[in-house]
Image 1 (tube, rainbow, N blue to C red):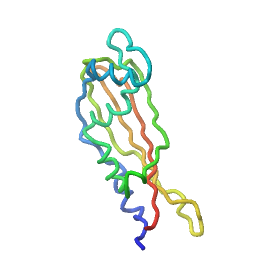
Image 2: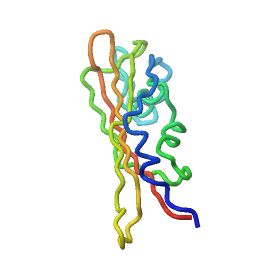
Image 3: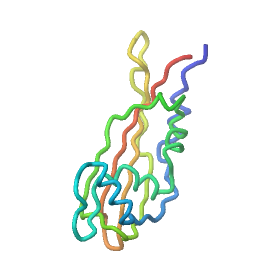
Amino acid sequence: MTEVISFEQVERAEGHKFPGGKYSIQHWENFLLTACTGADVMQDGVVHPIALFHVPILGSGTTIAEMFALGRADSDMSISIESYDWQLFNPLKEDTEYDIQGKITDVTRHNDKPGDTAPVYDRIVFDFEVHDDYSLVASSTVIWHYRREPI
């Protein structure tokens, strides 16, 4: 039987900063994302907030696969979502180049008490900021649980 990944192995990810980068949401991308929600495309090039699922991740220079690896996921099935929290301070716009930064701001282990029968999991908080040339436009906080089970 393999041991559960130690918390020290996972805790090293706290404070990790992604490389950061630029991202522009194209009209076709906005159109397809908006269509998936069943809504109509907004006027004046305003982007549907659903773009905040992927734009901060890609724009900050990371991938879902890297986020899995940083948390030492055992498999795709070992991840569960606690929440996605989006804050829009100004509308996202098509064809606007955004500067995006991201980092891991918290790593905690839960249900790791002797005799506790609840599953052990690590809670990892990813924070992303989306800036235009002038200000913070949006932020996205992604919280995932990485389930830990002895094999």
